[in-house]
Image (tube, rainbow, N blue to C red; front, top):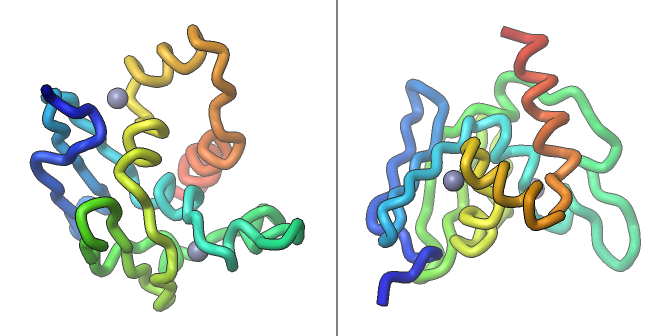
Length: 132
Ligand SMILES: [Zn+2]
Ligand SMILES: [Zn+2]
């Protein structure tokens, strides 16, 4: 059985600033680096023990902070990007990456299912639009 959260191929395009994942069910997900940075799940960015994280303060990210410089595979279940500012503590599980897929089809499905889209994701596209 094809698993929708199993990556068949992972491609980090540093020049384009995107992370593309081809899933075993043949769906493709492309994350712009800035969107991915906003989704960083680490304790520093997201907060812990009820305290807000750094990203919760809606900082203006510098071009270094949204620049994908490296990508490490964490076991069989996650990837850990390294960013231009040296940040590398966020482990993005494939389940999360698939669930947050920013493509039109998945966004529409989430709306249809009543799943709220991440505020940080729409915030990211706003930020990027303003700086390009
Ligand atoms: Zn982080
Ligand atoms: Zn999708």
